[in-house]
Length: 385
Image 1: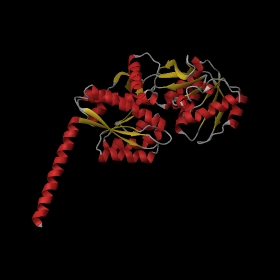
Image 2: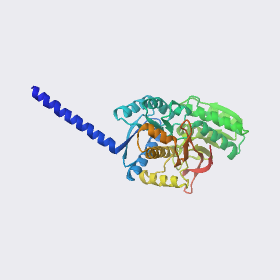
Image 3: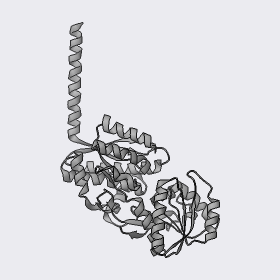
Image 4: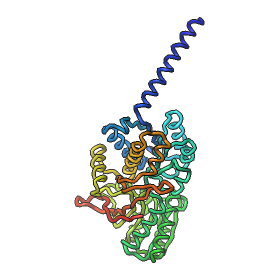
């Protein structure tokens, strides 16, 4: 009996050592990225598109020989748009899966609690689309691929005054949504600094679906433009009710509007015509980086990529370039290489400031109908930092 136990232990030890060797060999031949995406829940549309962009970039990189001869492997988790589940996903990726580089999460509320964990663990975190200013405050291992809300709100205010040339603005926003609050504050600051006047300032609660009381007040103030800083599902409801009450002036918003076309349908949506929103890139751009990305995305997914797909794609290439320059995927070296980033990507020419926020332009898109009568976005103008 003792002999049998001894043999069993020896066999187990052999398998354990073999497993370690196999794992080590796999690690030596691959670079593993963790991904935290909102693939179900309220932000599933954004999360699925972001992951599509990440998957496409990894496919391209691996087909071209990988990074420094190593193939990239993505281990992804769904946080369901829930901050607590985002934390659990991050802990699984960094402990059980032992990843040292994490892409995600998507929205700021799910991304923020991961930043202190990433900094404490020396994990490089790349946030594709979390625009809240505080995201990178946790420390020097945290980066983002998107511009931040203060810049985006400022872009909207400057666009309304300088490009649309309007004087009187109304604001309709959600004070319980940090994204909405940050955008409206900076829109108002930029618009009034340019000589404009805020003639109506109305709010609603998260989850509201009836905005007619606020719109009645807005209509009475006779604005030249209405700023609506929220996500696409809320914006669609507001747009219908604004137009139904006869408020036909331009609407202006931000990147949370991405998804309106998919929600409304390409052949619907008259209520969102004469509307503009700030975004990270224009799908109809003729820039070589954009054209190549859009072509490859259409071939893989049979649809046009939105900005979340572009930001996911850029996140991977930012990391690829940093690892290539560093010659290693060790987090400290990747962090240092990321800080020296200066290159052209799908969402623009990008460098990082001292807080690891990208310095790049924003585009303004207009919702229009194309020659076939379908609702599409059209590049309107670029606003530089």
